[in-house]
Length: 115
Length: 116
Image (cartoon, rainbow over all chains, first blue to last red; front, side, top):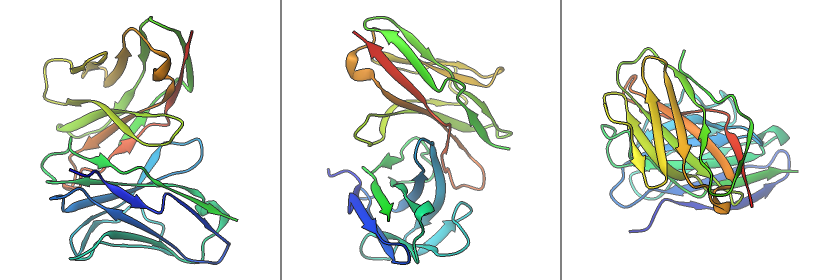
């Protein structure tokens, strides 16, 4: 059973470009969480999605950031007009059932560098 | 406010000795989960151990044990017989059961260095 997959693993963007980060949850998982880890810090919750629904986006910056989890395909975290402060590692985690909080499985992360 | 506090930015331990990494938490939820993750220099997040707020026994997973003191709101990680491969960042996390989202709240981490 493949784990949570994220791609790309490393992404370099110039200021003002768009970044698209993809997360394929584990098979059978319908819940996806996105977290951001700034350099030398812990992970911070961004958004929680189920298929076709955003459940909790309380950690998302109000501008430039959006997330989706379509019926088919991976979850996408989209950052428009990136700035240097967006440079971070972005992790997604998936869960089969929100009543099982111990079961959040993390992907390997995408390291975004904004030049 | 929901918060995780890890007060040790860095720790050293001699190989084969035990080490305790501190974690305190703050939540008004009665039901929550506590987790420890290891992040080696390669960057991935490796799940180590889980403790539920209603679990009466301290969790153990191989060389890892979680010293859960509910009244003190602490969830310290104990690593026995440290190995060189244990050198990494360690994060404590909490999942309060608020609003049904089960998002994790992470601490700032402790960098552990195991000395030969």
